[in-house]
Amino acid sequence: MFDKIIQIFKIRDLRRSIFFVIGMLIIFRIAAHIPLPGVDLVNLKEFFNSSQIFGLINVFSGGSMQNFSVVAMGVGPYITASIIFQLLIMIIPKLEMLSKEPGGYQKINQWTRVVTVPLAILQAYGMISILSHQSSYKIINFTSPFDLASALIAMMAGTVFLMWIGELISERKIGNGISLIIFAGIIDRLPQVVQKTIVVFDPTQIFNLVLFAAIALITIIVVVIINEGTRNVPVSYARHIRGHRMYGGTNTYLPLRVNMAGVIPIIFAISLIIFPPMIANFFINAKSKFLVDAAQFVISVFQNHLVYGILYFVFVFGFTYFYTAVIFHPQQIADNLQKQGGFIPGIRPGKHTEDYLAFVTNRIIFAGALFLGLIAVLPLIVQEFSGTLNLVIGGTSLLIVVSVVIETVKQIESQLTMRDYEGL
Image (cartoon, rainbow, N blue to C red; front, side, top):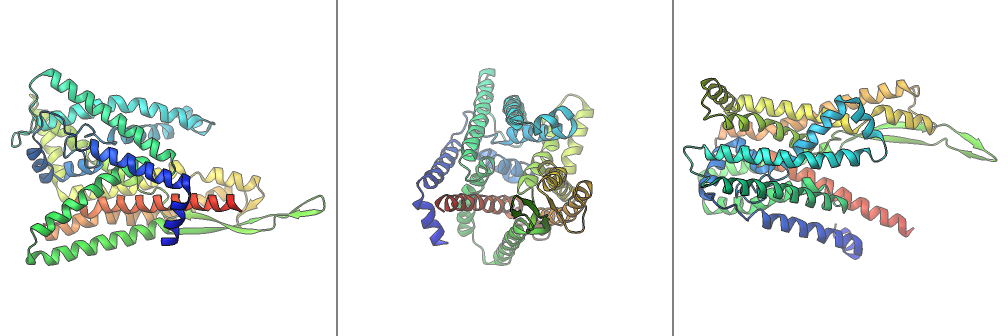
């Protein structure tokens, strides 16, 4: 490990990229501690601590929502826009064809950035309205429409700023920028949690602390196993003669990862599961009795731990399949193998190879999606029995942190490998 670290810092470009990423994350954390005027931060923190739904929103924003800073919306609107276009690509044939053309994804990414701006304004207005109507917590103290407009513009600009930072980080090929921003927000909160645990330490809580440590360890181990697990599909290449030389005739394998989607299903699931109660809170003080009753029903449903846990598991499970279908295309792999003279032993090239790859992928993704969903809801189950463990810290945060660390380490290792080949 120390040899790798020394090797990293000996390479100038890689060293500068790592320092650049760290610098961008520091700028993000500084912005996350610049609160908007007219907000009672003490009441805001109490409100977020009392609601697990809004606790997830705080994680989703990278920890900046709890301070209601200029980047309070985090990268949530950008991820929402990405989900919308991913769905549209699967539904609209023209968009699907565009995504396969050279430069097509660049155009779709540009449209995603444009859609992020109105989504950020809409979500910021919804969040301000929800917090303004919390009768038990006096959080928002805006005195004029100008205050509201200023806050909306600042929060929208903060989201665009984070989106820009995330893309700058991704260009350095040291991890995914959006995931690293969420990762930085989670890590920033851990010292506070540890400090609070030490200050209010009670010997009677030793069992709960040991239980939390066990859950964290199990989560880390299982996530690493899932991310590193692969199914190696054997591939053979036919021999062919060109001139007086013989080519091909080699045997290799095609690695299919158990969890191809990485941490994206967790982020997608969070964005979807917080949407209904967030909209319901917006109508909780409506003049129509029907809207008020409907909003209260939605809120009560999502506050039910059983319903919430089931929905969270289903969303994580479903999005694992969905995002795998977006990034993994058996037809393209089968066509490429056939063009290169490759085949899977015992399987005919073409359509049969495509069906076989789809069959194998569905089987291994089922195991990955099942484990990922169970890990996501495991801390919620423990919380029901103990009544003290925090869902956000215990489950979702560890999933994101471990997955982002693994992805970042792999990208750094690939950079080292690439430079080794250049040296040879």
